Image (cartoon, rainbow, N blue to C red):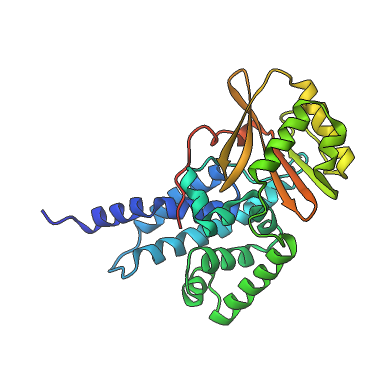
Length: 293
């Protein structure tokens, strides 16, 4: 039996689901919101009539437009967010780390810089630089001219270079070993020495759990904060696992994930520490999420 057009479209949608999720996740920084947008993409795809020449391009165009609307609604919600907002972390399979472009694009450091862009700049960059869309294809999604898309993507690339001058800025295994050893030993001097003088720590508790509601600045202040956190939670287990295309420290208490910690390095040591403690954002860390580009 020849499959119907609806059946073929459904198969194509499932084939591209991980691509759509990754695209939207990079735009929104939220796995939960990305799931909603992907579902809405399928509902809108079902309303498309007539032949479709490039299914992936159509789905990405629909997903981008839905995501842009979601980004504007998301910005309004964040006005009431308690403390710093960080992207929702997601566990990924180890092979993601081998795809340099994909791993960098979903890293916490990159997502943090993308958050500083306008919705259109972010979409233009992600579509053209990560997913290989042409300026014309991205223009259809953004309802912009090719020249406008190129300008948006150029501004985004400049901002990425300013905000993240070091590619692959995740910590090496040696840095992670020194970092965890110093904190376990309660060694203030050793912890401080690993951090740059202008380092910053950002913690997202969302008002649900105790966390720093403002960034912690300076090596010694951060070291004291981390050692204090370790003292308050002595009965924990820690694992270094692939999260967001880089290695991160997964901390469990009583068998449940209580936080995930990321390190971003630069010249002279650790320049940024990001800690996710909001329990509403810790649900995608036990099982790898399928991502693709």
